[in-house]
Image 1 (cartoon, helix red, strand yellow):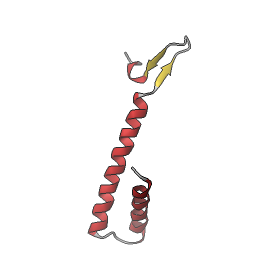
Image 2 (cartoon, helix red, strand yellow; image 1 turned 45 degrees about the vertical axis):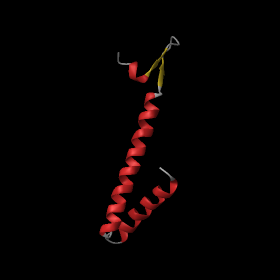
Image 3 (cartoon, one colour; image 1 turned 180 degrees about the vertical axis):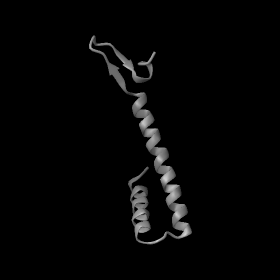
Image 4 (cartoon, helix red, strand yellow; image 1 turned 90 degrees about the horizontal axis):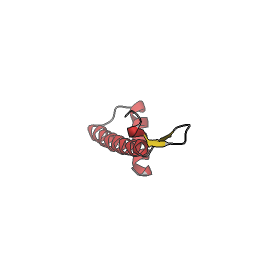
Length: 68
């Protein structure tokens, strides 16, 4: 998600603290929030999938294989 979308989402949140949002603004805020969460989850999933646990004996296992 680009910086402009995040800034607009923050602006809509600030506006909502001052007054009620119009139906169009509410729809836009909901859409942008959904896009943000989708991007955040994808980024977090990617980070976790690439995390490696290193044991004291020097062996390394991907995080997804640690419980096995």
